[in-house]
Image (tube, one colour):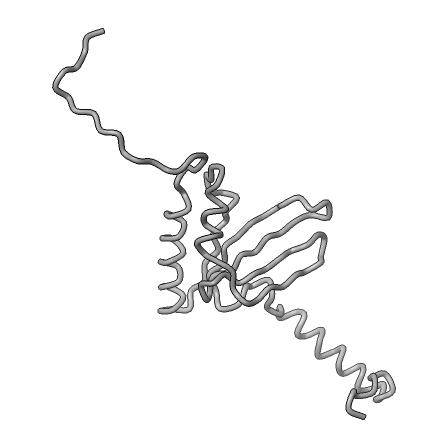
Length: 147
């Protein structure tokens, strides 16, 4: 093997130990999705499970997004935790099965996460439920706290 004299070699600083450097590209994707949401109302979901994250990437991304004021928890075939990040319109949605194993981890760029929106069939059922209660009379309604 012959040497290659005269060819300079530079070592570029890389990611920190245990990181693959994918947190920042995801932040750029979130930034572009936020711009689209603000301009056109178009929402976006980013599947973090599909990202080639190395050790430390997910933690770095979540630290950069920060913690917002809103948290919600759903219990349906397992626990789903929804939390607002410190960036308005950017939500973390963590779906787990009944055993607590993570199924899906999403970043949702939206005014309200879709999973929290009432679905049209549920609205129709709600009208029917309230109609039935009204038809049965007020005896099914609990007393008001101020009475």
